[in-house]
Image (cartoon, rainbow, N blue to C red; front, side):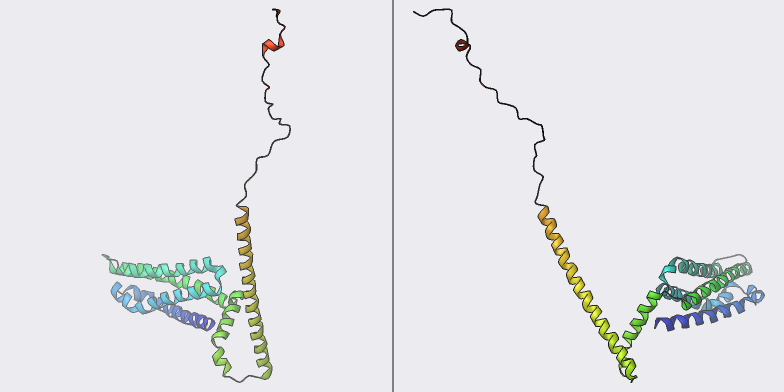
Length: 232
């Protein structure tokens, strides 16, 4: 169940963050540890909080997708100093104690960012996306339908479930009919497009344009001029 998993992950993350914070109060002791020893004492907690942060990120993105940029930003702000902490401890250094001190500074940054991420997770837990919550709860009910069917319930509750099931079936039927109608509309539109593609524009004579008249053949000059020679 998503909601139960989210609540449990928040609780685990908060406990682990408190544990790391408590260890940070002994910073003087930790700063005197060489990098190898410091990593040995912190490896489990750092690895676990990295894993939990990634898991929380995915759950928050599911429950509140509209806050995706903030979720990714705050998760990265935590994971980056945790990575820097490990890299600093494994980096070769001429002054191991200075390296341990520098690594602990990265861990302190991670603790602060972890607190910010925890606040965001609690905020989303209290007010997740309404539409996403509705869908997830319906899915949980659907997944548990076999279990629920084995539990006796009051008659009024059973009647409500029956009515809900009938409404869902009617909705599914309406969606199917709508899909068929849309398919028919698409088919008709394709037919219209195919038919109209057969037509081409015809040549139309512009108004006021006269066709050129065919010239008449000229008469012979001899027939149009008087003759000067008299015939006997």
